[in-house]
Amino acid sequence: MFDNDEWLNQHREDVIDPDREIVDPHHHLWRPDNPAGIVYDLPELWSDTDDGHKVTQTIFMECGSSYRKDGPDHLKPIGETEYIAEAAAKSAAEPGKATIAAFIGHADLRLPLDTLDEVLDAHIEAAKGLFRGIRHAGPYDEASGEFRIKPRAPKGLYKDEDFRRGVHRLGERAMTYDTWNYHTQILDFADLAAAVPGTTMILDHFGTPLGVGPYAGSHKANFSKWKDDIEAVAANPNVYAKLGGLAMPDNGFGWDTRDTPATSDEIVDAHGPYYEHMIRCFGPDRCMMESNVPVDRLSLSYRTYWNAAKKITAGHSEAEKDAMFSAVARKVYKVEADV
Image (cartoon, rainbow, N blue to C red; front, side, top):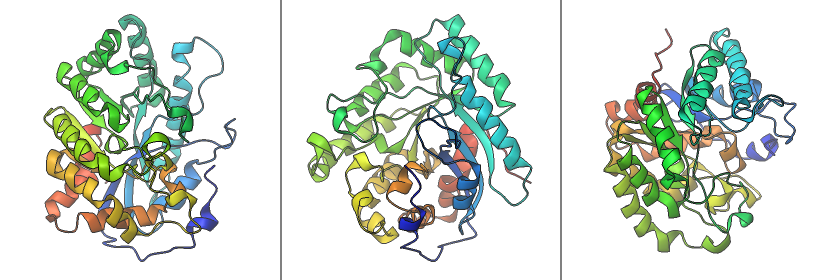
């Protein structure tokens, strides 16, 4: 699925602002023996992080990778944590390479609290000091059969009282809650954030403005409503925003179906208004740039993404850029700078 280096290498740009430190707060890994046939392991990640930009640390985001095959279902996600802890140890042992500095795992937050605590404790033990929180994402749409990335959430997850109790538990344990959903669910997420103000929450991927299936060609028509909904989310001070993921196929910009990958200038033109609105609503002190590799690699290269992000934020102060490219990620996920 992600073996597209030859296609991506058709377009190569000079690196912009190469000395700016980057903490990439959102990437996935799949080891070569993954039954889905997806391969994006530590060597592939390093191939991207070594490609010109100054990426010093990364944060792994759960993706259903390397789950345990045996044992109780609620503990199967611990297999992913064990896999990433091993990869993180390898990264820490390689001077000059980007280090996996934190880990976000998965748990079903609807579990009874004693069972949920068992899962969280198991993540903590397996992650060897890197575990920071949970992503139990909420994407649901009746047209999802037409989407390339299939959602895993039931309808109405954010309103489920058992689920809200689990999100609250994360806050009680000083853990973060990450999620992604579709643009049709942004107000539901805002309601969740208001209902559980003690938990630090991170909205991934701009709330995923859809552009395929029944939403094809609807970006301009839906943009005003999306802006209003994002303002409603940003009114909750416990929510932070990740700015990336707009190049996923289901966003419908069509980069993944072209003969050549997107350029940073094309990304700026198409995606810039979304970035600008998010930064305006949340402020640079609650925004972090994310690559979402390898999924966004279906549309553009790692080098190109970070060039686009730097072009979009060129008018901000040095302190604001430092916040969005590294400091906010370190604050939210409790990551100390490498020394």
